[in-house]
Length: 321
Image (tube, rainbow, N blue to C red; front, top):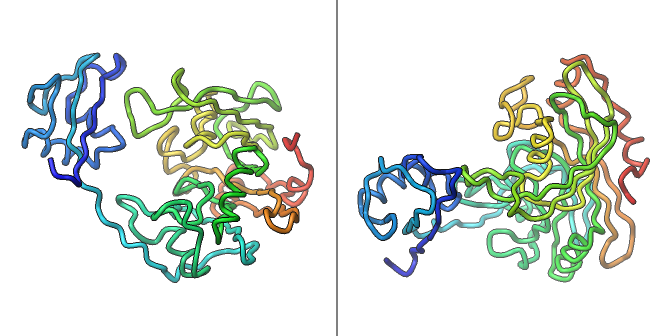
């Protein structure tokens, strides 16, 4: 094994038993693809309980699998002239409205055209605390989740915003169009979120997950659909999408936790519509909102819904306590 390569050790959980080895490996977030898994098995880079096996081997609960991972692909982080919708900007930070389809930071399979590439072109420099590939990034949104995100331009601001986020002093509100209607007009979901025990590229409510808390209220109902306002207290990966699917209200057009391609949407109907924080240097209250993108609002119209008064939603301070 070369220095650049790494070894992954995993133990098969009971829920994942009886899958083909290559299929099981392809569900691990660290494994690039099923084709890589097949090739690695044939080359003897993968062992089960210390032995080489065929790719058709059916994994058993308790199997100890060792995987030699490929060296990470070098990614060149270059500024790119990608248009950005900027709601606020000064020497310390920038608040942008992220469009659907834009990945926040470069990663395997998304080496360019990310929000970071756009910010580097627009802002010239960003805080380095987020890491080489995540400069300035304090929090993130999924690729197809739209809406507001704040990035830091210097280390002072990055540290302060990260501390405020951890202390729950950065407030984030979302809008989601979901299937079904909650039993109560307002409520909360408190359930731990972690890696799915079988498909490791998904998240799930699981006993071994990290604590996660989401508040919601019903804004409108349209037959089989509901428009919800949500407030995050924690920010786990895919938290809102996982929590809503968990209570039987999957987000419309969610390709991972629901059904993709619904109502003409290219991704889940989830929008980070309001962001409220205290400027770490000036102490000024920054409180911004942005309506959902055109396809989200068109989907509402297609099901007979009327868009709510977003400006009013942005000042009623529901969930701020």
